[in-house]
Length: 358
Length: 260
Image 1 (cartoon, each protein chain N blue to C red):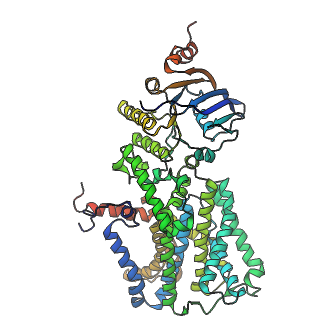
Image 2 (cartoon, each protein chain N blue to C red):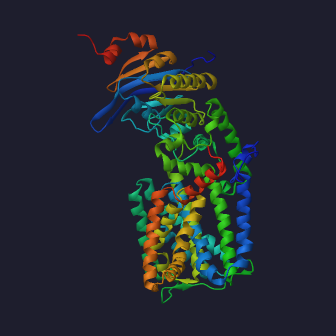
Image 3 (tube, chains in turn cyan, yellow):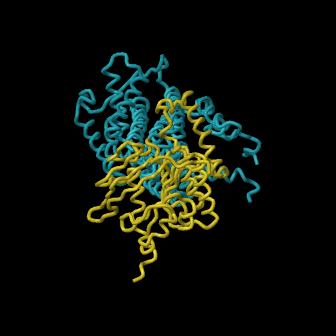
């Protein structure tokens, strides 16, 4: 009833090609962003920021990067964690080895380093695809796990193997409080999401999707598979690298290679599969699902047990949490293999007709 | 008709192609003139699709060469062919299933789009202007093919006949000089075949595009093509106008079996 685009006529191609062509969507997104910037800092406490919101923002960014590669270009990767690590350690080395390196500079240089490495590890994609490529990217994961543990130069010869950063500051804005960190991550996420959206709705995005859907036909049209695939690896690794640097610098503060283990790679891959392959929005849904759901279950199960008169031990809760979480993943994949983003768009389609479907 | 058949634009000389021990094409030579509609016919397995794949560089022939507007290509590849103005459609529709009709046809403009990655990411003036200019061009093709009503539909959801039309649209978006059509009417009913024949003739007439097509429906081939090449078991057994080919005893025996 309310969600209608009737009367919103497009008279130029420009208005037809907006990111959100429907007026109500534009308002909803503006309100959401305004709420994220203004409302949330007023409402939420320190714990929420540190445990949920900041990880959510950073992993959304990483999932976004992975989605460009896996969802849009169809090149499966199991090395996302390694590229987060490369971003984090590269940013760390730029920050400590170059005097007066600003935080933003270090983060972006971390991203660029990750992009370069991504191009190198993307080369196998020119010859192999599917599961074989997944194995090839797995090699990246193992190699970099090893490198950051064993090559001491990367960790500046720290004896414990862990590195730490302090005194984060961006243009005189000191990121001490959780709110500042949250806002900084939010700004980066919004900017990168916009850039990513522009890419996927532009020529390069079409090239990626063409390679994903039918590579022979793409070549015949004049798309060079090498350029399309390697650019996807570069852009994806750049975003994942920046996310990794944020994870180390802003979220953890001090970290060791285990922070970017293969678990992280799988986690990111699950996020994009559950959220929706080939959807920017899906990356956010997936990250929210993977991060928020376990925390929710963690709080909700003891409460449910209390209602039934049972007291559930912490260990049992965490076991049940895993079981329910796994079952939900299977459930969602069966109900909607295209992910939460597709559920969302189906819902919107229904809403457009409601209450008079015909 | 307004168009006039011009000089030789594409010349194939002694093309042989084999896969391991299997000879797909043996010493095939024929030429295609500018603005003409050239058909390749032959029984199943005669090597027709292989022939098209050789022309646009998907397959590399072991022998022979391709001369395109006087330029010799001994090693053609799909990218070079695309740059040289050769477009094609596929026998088993090879559309980008996850993308809308509009995006599929826009993808055909790839070679003409110059904005770099950063400009696209920030959608700076130039990238935006380019996108809109190409959109306008693509809309002309959408109008031409009468598929306005489905421009935002993902192609995977379209019926077969429309998918074939989108496939043609994507090829047309390249503004090709030579258009290779691999069985454009396979699996269509009579009305769809008539529509498609009309589109092919219109493309040829309005844009002056040279067309090389493979087709099994003899009625269509004899009706719309200017000259016909007949292949059988990878060899050329006939070449000429539809009437000449129809009268050729070798062709008759390949299609109907010879009387002994």
